[in-house]
Length: 61
Image 1 (cartoon, rainbow, N blue to C red):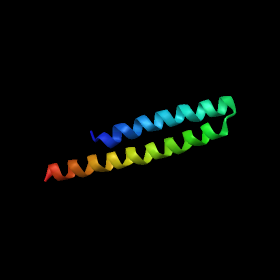
Image 2: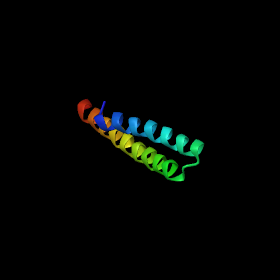
Image 3: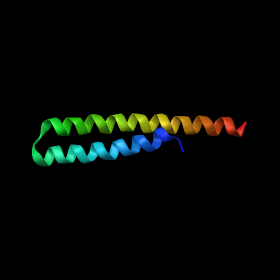
């Protein structure tokens, strides 16, 4: 499993928590920061998944 996949998933979770905390406390800056971090994590996780698929395809040859 690629390290980007793991780090991305962690960022997604952290971003989700920040987003919820921002909503609960009414802090729009924290909520927005959480959304950005969550989106960044999603992209990073997808990159990791693509690397894994590419590695698997190369290994099968």
